[in-house]
Image 1 (tube, rainbow, N blue to C red):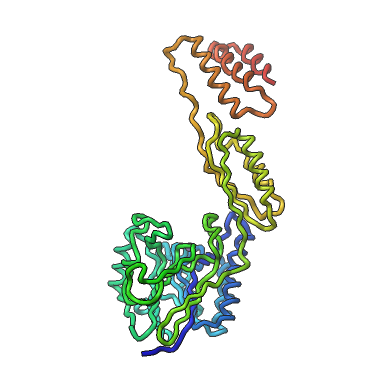
Image 2 (cartoon, helix red, strand yellow):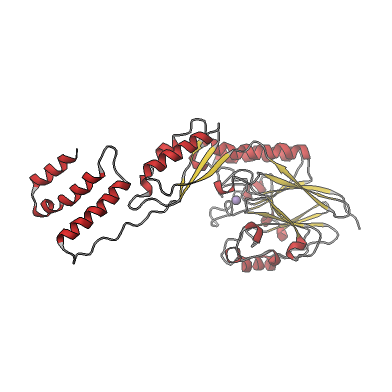
Length: 404
Ligand SMILES: [Mn+2]
């Protein structure tokens, strides 16, 4: 038995309309990535394009984003390359009033929204494509089973069978624990030659046999076309080109996008530094890594000295340290240390004052305002208590003035 050879594109997570960091440039980046993908697809001239969810970042994109998407979809339509799509976590209908933008685009003939089609599927030549919408409930496994029961897939062994889905499957290699995904590759309906996934923004390709699934094909996540979260920065951006021969041999090629935004992500442990030292060191590091157009993400880790707060680290200094980068976006993961416990009130008054002094001294040493003496601040903090309690305004004033 042989079939007509075919080629198709497996893409997902384009996130059109996402203005990351509220930046116009980032909004354009997501558009640029999709335009580059369409450019490449027009060169490849595949039999169809399958978009496995999150073409849009919102179920109701702005008119501007919509216009951009329509322009690109029109380029594919003019080239007679059908586009098939399912919705993802970002562009599925949050409710029946809002709906998903994919429906009107289907009605306009710009794409085929698979869940809207009878049998949630379409046949193109010798290829059968079944697509399920986003599984939104926590009980994804049950939801998938329900969907498959209501709209049963009908893969045909004489054809090449593709299933599109948008959900995280528990796959150890992707670092998704079983309880988080609660649905695994073995829960997918059988009879398909290629399982095309969306939602995981990291490209992934594995033989079906690795998951004990029958057949010679693959289970794949195409990854995203731009960096939606800095944690994904190191993964390449692009999509898969799937080639199927007459005897159903499958070959998958990675097509990388080149025009995507550069991210510079680094970690800096500030343990042992005062907040102001930490700020200066981070700024130095950002300066050294500064690069035209890059998004610089310093991940600040470690432990602050006792009494110092996260807000004491001057992030403004860190952000303004780069001159060439598009933006600097610090991620603060530092721990605040607890101060030594306050003395109990049963102790002698003098001892209490001594301990209070030590407490204040430690606190002020770790977060002393510019030009202030921590010892003087601590002494004043202790001395001011008595006049404050007795209402001696003169004494309070003179103590405060003594600080300046
Ligand atoms: Mn996504």
